[in-house]
Amino acid sequence: MFQSGIPFHETGNFKSHRTFLPDDQYGIALDNLVKGCTDILLLSPPQTKPTKIFTGRRIVQPQPDWWFIGGRIFPGETPVQSAQRLLSRELNLDISSSRFHPVCAQAFAFEMREQEPKHHGTTDVQFCLKVRLESDEEVRKVVLDEKEYGEWEWKEPREILEGNFHPALKYAVGCFLAGEALEELEECERRGGRDEEVAK
Image (cartoon, rainbow, N blue to C red; front, side, top):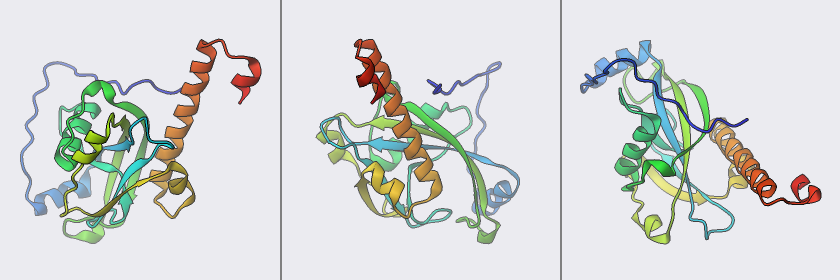
């Protein structure tokens, strides 16, 4: 059964004390902590057939290649709040919380990182969410940070699954397709579809 959400449990009255860390201190933190990330499968509007997924080719470590849109979770943020902030920062999109849906969770270990010493690498845990744009107007709003991304492209899921892409991106796309198939099956059952229709 697919998880319908990512629970956020706050015990007591948590207050964030997040401060900016210079690169040398942040590097020490990365040597000792696993950081949490929220990454987003940004989907093309419903009228686009087949569905396409927005990808950006990063030009910075730890993954200077095609990747999700996303980044680090700040203390006290829910995964959805983090995703909202990141889409606003990275793509100039203001998306309501109700439009986000969970896809999967993964863990990473990267050999390299952007902060010195670069070869120390970094380890992450990821919450992957999906959100579908609603109109061509939203698509036109998308603007990428040229300091982090060299190019961007809307890709069909099969292109990612069959192409030379990071296993984490392929896994998330596979989970997305499995979730879509389950939703179609449940909708068919709600409509009272015939057995042969459900079996498809």
